[in-house]
Image (cartoon, rainbow, N blue to C red; front, side):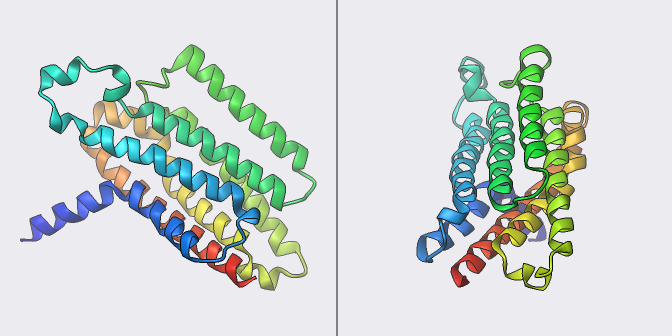
Length: 233
């Protein structure tokens, strides 16, 4: 009995990258959220939902084909690496835009340079070193985490130094940054080692990805909290 329960929970966790995004999107659909102030986050959620839905479909697609037929399909239908890699790039772009628009500080130019550097790194990496179609890029995701955590830490330092820091918990941006911080901090070591682990220790990599999914669920819940605070303002 317990084995069946654990199997069901594992299936639920495996598809959490889809249903977790539906939580803030469903709240958004029934609440008067300040969409203009959160446009980058809303756009991210819709794109992430589409990409993650494709990933889940591709993961389960082999169940509908014989091994011979499966190997004959185009590579784009047999691998989900490109969706993951694209997700990382889009997340950095949209959240950087969100930080730039909502956090006016002395590092605006630095943030823009960091974004350009990240995109340049991604282009060079995929042109000369890794295939974006066949390989989940640990390099890309690890650099993403470093960039996002830098922005998050800088935001916290500014929030603490402001005179109105006591009201920070009522700000939607605080909850978005908190969720992003938790997600990136939890996932950093997973991202850093995932390409190696999935190649040599597949079972361990799959178990570690559960922690990534838990971090992503928390991320989406915090975005929902941000939408709630936006509604109150």
